[in-house]
Image 1 (cartoon, rainbow, N blue to C red):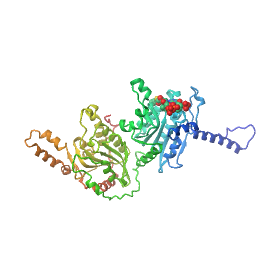
Image 2 (cartoon, rainbow, N blue to C red; image 1 turned 180 degrees about the horizontal axis):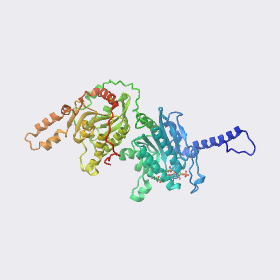
Image 3 (cartoon, rainbow, N blue to C red; image 1 turned 120 degrees about the vertical axis):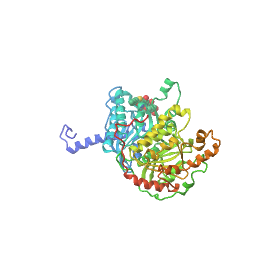
Image 4 (cartoon, helix red, strand yellow; image 1 turned 180 degrees about the vertical axis):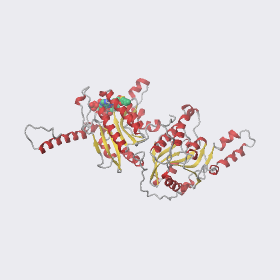
Amino acid sequence: MLLRCRTPTRRPFEFCLKRSYSAIEQRRQQAYQGGGKDKQDSQHNKGKLTARERLSLLLDTNSFREYDCFVEHQCHDFGMQDKKYAGDGVVTGHGTIHGRRVFVYSQDFTVLGGSLSKSNAQKILKVMDQAMTVRAPVIGLQDSGGARIQEGVDSLAGYADIFQKNVLASGVVPQLSLIMGPCAGGAVYSPALTDFTMMVRNTSHMFVTGPDVVRVVTNEDISQELLGGAKTHTTKSGVAHNDYANDIEALQGMRDLFDYLPLHNQDTIPTLPCDDPIDRQDQALDSIIPSDPSTAYDMKEVVERIIDNHSFFEIAPKFAQNILVGFGRLGGQSVGIVANQPLISSGALDMDASVKAARFIRFCDAFNIPLVTMVDVPGFMPGTGQEHAGIIRHGAKLVYAYCEATVPKLTVITRKAYGGAYIVMSSKHLRGDYNVAWPSAEIAVMGAAGAADVVFRNHPDKKSMEQEYKDKFSTPLMAASRGYLDDIIQPRSTRTRLIEQLALLKTKSIQNPWKKHGSIPL
Ligand code: HXC
């Protein structure tokens, strides 16, 4: 660069240097302005932050190192040669969250609607490649009108390259998506291929085709918000996991989630100093199970009383609420928690619950995060609705995920564990490492009334047979007598027991037989 600095008269070397530096700095400043003040104002008026403001909240102060802020698109069609912006609509690089490395890209809606050009895609691919090289997670902040229309197939190729890289990175480094604006067309499939997707309420949308196309093709009249807003995707479709009121809360939520995750699939489990005593006994747990077996209680309260500082980071809290999944810490170490929720549908496993839990279990297993399963489940959900929509196929995903998982698996049965659902929920039979029950546990093929209807229906003393069945199985003793439970423990001691076993299982190492990959029932 300096060698090429030609001047008509001989000028001092320092002068050339300063001139080229000032041109560079000017271009860098242009990159910082994105699409300019008016566009940034319009972004703010919509209640959204700019791409750079978002990164400054996501990452530790002064930790962001940007790549490619001078990159421009190479399109010359449709007047695009006059619409060149330094950085081309996406800000990329790396930084830290609480001191731990992360690669990031943040789409800049102020530049051509954050649309994805070939050059812009190459910037994203560069950080994904580097994340794989040094083994660190990738967070994508999505705010884009999709494929840059003027570039045609070049922008589609850019998306294809990103999908391919998403899949190769899957299970190697965590990939996290935060939807902070429109996300339309094929663009939704990159977030969908990542591990966790968060949305901002009212300002972010995800759909394969927008309301206009829907109207033409299906004759439905629907708003963007109803079609693909945060509420739709976190309560109905399950496409997004968590939603937040605004950009600031969403970025903080992403930082919180990040703290639970290892940086890659061979990293150690994140462990924070723990100020919650390991031997803390929670007396309230001893009486949390109602005496009437058909009365519900809140399993989330049970989870929170057991884990460090009552702090549970729930994933998908509004979808398939009959099962809880999320992260917590035990003795400072991250664990993945899966728990039936008796408050909703008595905690029965339906299709959505099965898929929600299976996906979470597979994430934890891929990144070596131990699994703690809390069981109170009356069975799989009966009915034609579930059967005809494929509960067998979807329930099998949960069976598959638990069977496949080789991470430490710790299971606590608090009350009901009936039938197939007993087996599925991380039982001893599916390579559970530590399986215990509270004294209130009932482990049986089904509830006593249902059992009596089937096997004692013609018995002259059906009532007493039902009682006999109840006496025999409304206790964990039979399962314990066969070694299917390692112990029956006092509820108050659950936290201590789990932490002890986690320490024991730190050196656990088992492997499944070699295969190209399994064939999970999709
Ligand atoms: C080029 C785009 C663009 C795009 C928006 N812009 N989307 N430029 N390609 N895909 C530009 C607009 O022309 C405008 O430029 C600026 O961004 C802001 O857009 P507005 O429309 O003014 O903003 P807003 O009203 O907020 O609407 C946002 C929007 C809308 C809902 C995203 O722009 C829109 O519907 N865009 C098209 C969405 C789409 O169909 N994308 C293609 C999806 S198909 P100026 O210069 O006026 O400021 C796809 C295929 C991927 O992505 C396949 C992968 C396999």
